[in-house]
Image 1 (spheres, rainbow, N blue to C red):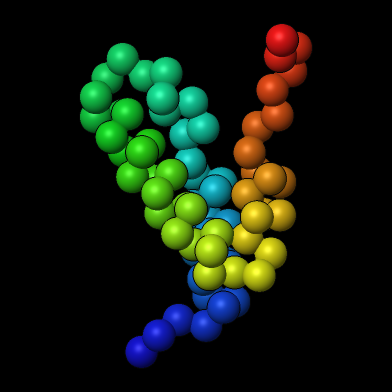
Image 2: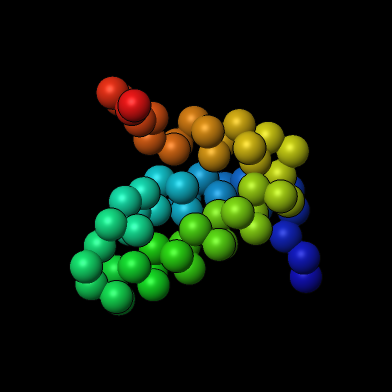
Amino acid sequence: MSKTVEQIREELIQALSRHDWYYDRSDDPRDYNAGKASFYLIRSLVKQVPDGEALYEQYQPKLSGAI
């Protein structure tokens, strides 16, 4: 049985809220690999939901003071 768009959207929101946005700065390979896997799952889900990119932008931390 395939998931509905609403179920995928809910899965995306949960993944976004649990994601370690700074995984790529980790010294621990386990944390890095878990974060990378989470990121790939999120990107896959984003493509399956009409407002996926908007949700991604909403949850992604904004850089402050970036040069």
